[in-house]
Length: 96
Image (cartoon, rainbow, N blue to C red; front, side, top):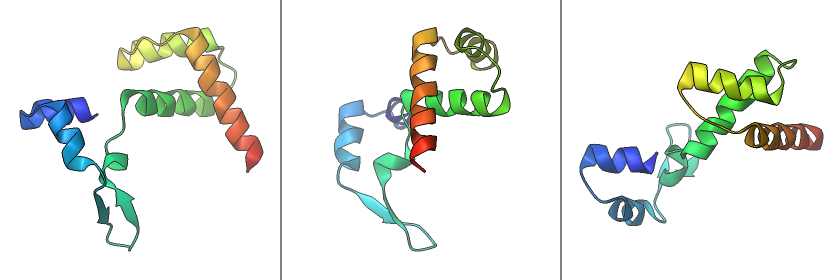
C-alpha cells in the first residue's frame, strides 16, 4: 500500500501521494498505467484474497471465509464485508 511504501522510503504519505498523482509509466509491452494503480490498497488486496478463497472453495460460508482470512493472512474482515465482496464478484461475473 502507499502507506507501506511511504514508511519504507521514510517520507510522509501525503508527499508520496502527490509525487504519484497524475504520473504513469509505459510497460514493456506498450500498455500505459497510472503508477498509483501499481500500488494496491488494503481493500483491493483483501478483495483479491476473498475472491481467491471463493474461487478455490465456493461452498464456504461468508463466516468461514472471514475466519480463513484471519488464519491465513491475519486479516480481520467482517462477515458482511465478505458478503459484499462475494456479491460484487457475482455482479462482475454476470456482466461478462
